[in-house]
Length: 395
Image (cartoon, rainbow, N blue to C red; front, side, top):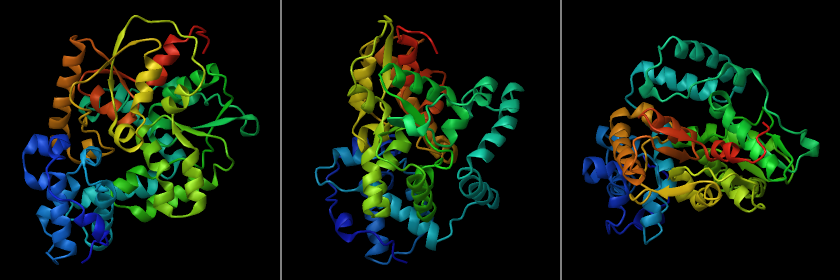
């Protein structure tokens, strides 16, 4: 089979090795096949040399976190993210993977049934909440503590006709971390905006599907989001992974409409840092900022988080060059061993930066927050920290 990848992109890698220190899976395994250049060499072998697809190739593709740190380090500008997404799409389409029947059923149910239907995800959240209260959900799963009042209360967005900005609420985050949206809206109003929340039909952005190789499903979800978020108002996204995917809709769909939509998308902190300064109370607390990979390497907006938080907190960065935390969408669930080893390095870097076991961590991505929270860290979204620091404490 051919992977259908861009040959010029494949041969652009000169195997210089500058990416190796930035690759989390290479860092924890030391294996060449677990590095960006090793994975690209494997892709070339399949596409150009007609090498057979075996377990080693499939494993190498699946064990990539897709953090895209290698792209930032690459002097040749190799679009590794596009190559990995293309390889996974080809495997999903043409080469059924050797997963267990249970995993295939769970993936079908999650990707095809639940995520595109926000009402169903919210309905299924209630038994999850009950399981949490009965202590049946292991902490290592990293699921945020779900609040009954938060689930019952609608988000306080303005009517779309009167709004000048839209907060994209998504699917999983809308069900499990709705209070982050609530705080984001509060901060946006304090910044002088009139925010609305996204249409409930524009729920899942397709990021998780794209990472899993389900490209056609991702495109269908992207088209649905675009249709149900018309207009020209900025679209603010408080999930780094979702924002990265939505900013790339122009490439994903290849239409002028998609490119125009993508130009409206901005990260919450990216939008906020361009506004007049908020009236904040200086907290006196230190915050270690964990830069989510898709905010740092794809959106190139990580500096905005540091900027907005520095107005109320003593901001501290980690000394690990932004190494991935190992969350990677559903990576922590699909590859728990590797995700755990990658996270151990990140937690050590965070604790070293703070010099305090009771460290407060800021993360602009829900998956990172849950993954690090499962390791015992107190992780908050920048919107939550800023809402706490507002001089006007009215919710």
